Length: 222
Image (cartoon, rainbow, N blue to C red; front, side):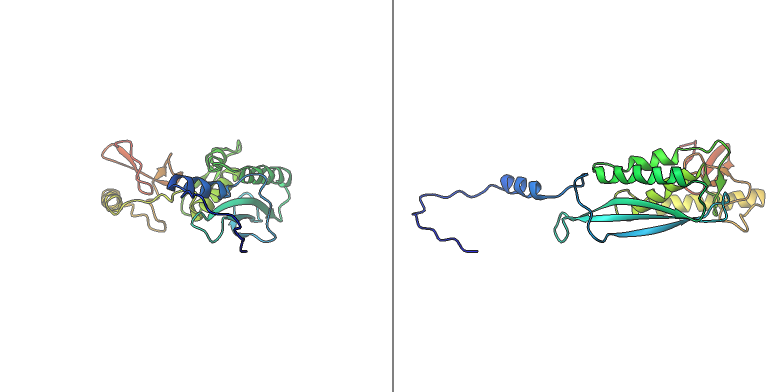
């Protein structure tokens, strides 16, 4: 829309770079509890199958896109739903999803939820997933799912080993197999491996008096 200037221009001022940046920052929408939910959200659904139940759990996490189409586009988790045919855990699952969704919508750093949930232990004992990963509780596995999702949308960095670390671990695995005859047949890691305290995978072996994890590289020898 044009605007007619009916007075003489007696001066002008060019905004500084700092002023332009402050103005841009003031227009950037950050996640907070007053952000309204759009009609449709993108998300992902994850399947959890445990030996504790015949029925799987399906965890759906939906994300909201803030400042779409700009250089400040942000993807943030907005809500979480958990569904299952098994109604044994219905009450606490509804409570958990409402609390976690409220934390998502509150804004700020929500990644702390991952460690809080993964640290929950079932007094009746946990269970092993395929691949040898130990889950101390069903709540902890939900924490692992949230961690995977936050890594997929870029809120958490995805841990990875360097090529040098992978080479060292492969050499250790080969040396261990030659010495013990346990080459991990039928599985990725030796059958006699113990549980790693860092990554919760049954992949820690004792070599030369040093307990080393063949999955994450954690070692008591540094």
